[in-house]
Amino acid sequence: MSKDHLSEAQFWFQRIAKTALRALHILGIVGAGGGILLGVNDDIWLNYWILAMSTGAILMAWEVLRDWQWLIQLKGVLTIVKIVLLCLFIPLAAYKPALFILILLLSVLVSHGPAGLRHYSIVHRKQIHGKKEIKG
Image (cartoon, rainbow, N blue to C red):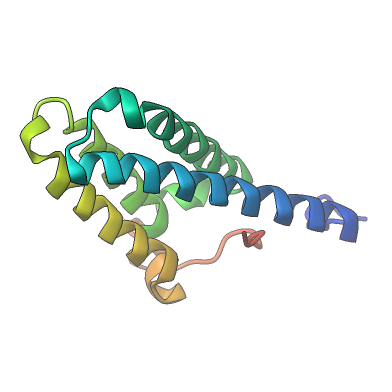
């Protein structure tokens, strides 16, 4: 069996693990987003924020370790842009709701945009395909 080929059990484990991580990430985003958009005290939604940031970091690491080319494809580049926008929460605290909405819209574009957009390489100036993805 080649290094890139997964057994059926490995495939299903990775698929379920990634789906579970994504579900927890969305839960964290919803909880933190509600707090941000409604102007609720941080201590009420902080655990959701921690959940969103930790699962987001794990999902990003998963993609980079799976295939470094993710970093030069639009799906990776836009994820990095979202992290930069998150960092602006500190100096531009009054704009947190607007920044959150922008990050959310970028997330939808990355997740649901056509493959030609997600797989477009900013280095190669064309669509590139890396290793086969485990959806989830």
